[in-house]
Image 1 (cartoon, one colour):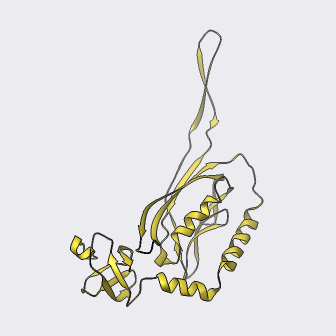
Image 2 (spheres, rainbow, N blue to C red):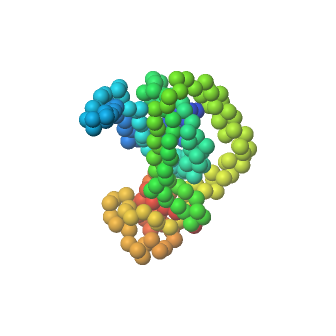
Image 3 (spheres, rainbow, N blue to C red):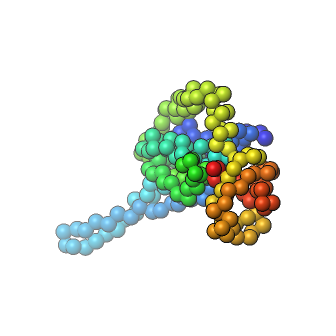
Length: 220
């Protein structure tokens, strides 16, 4: 799989490659006139249009542990970026003005029995910044890459990934509500422990012979 960068902001890359998949979804923005109303001494109101309101942009990302992205680490990384300003690039081209990250919210969290977040949705909101240029974008990107590279030894990362990744032979419980064929998972089936017979792509075959998405499973 070739490295395909979908978008980038302040050193954060949203891409699809052989190691991980982390793409943006539900992108929204709008242009709105800026109306200013003033009241004179006689009590008469006058409304004038003064350009456009600061542009706002929002989108979500859905990091998945099995796709090479640690959802908890990804969410916590945005706490440090609140109030930071950078240019949003989509498809290699600037999208809108310089944008400041104003909020990051977490939802749709799926946890395993060890408290590890396997998947979630992170909603990111941005607002047009008054800064004309942010010179630290490139430096921040390089620093972020160096921090990630030096955070843990490669062999330790491999051990951690193997320990918390659903694979053939893993013991799991079902946390999802449906099998791959669309049939509902009963409460009795959710209370049992199963062994993974095999995995093909994102679909796992359980010891009971049924197939289910790996995101609907929790390690025991």
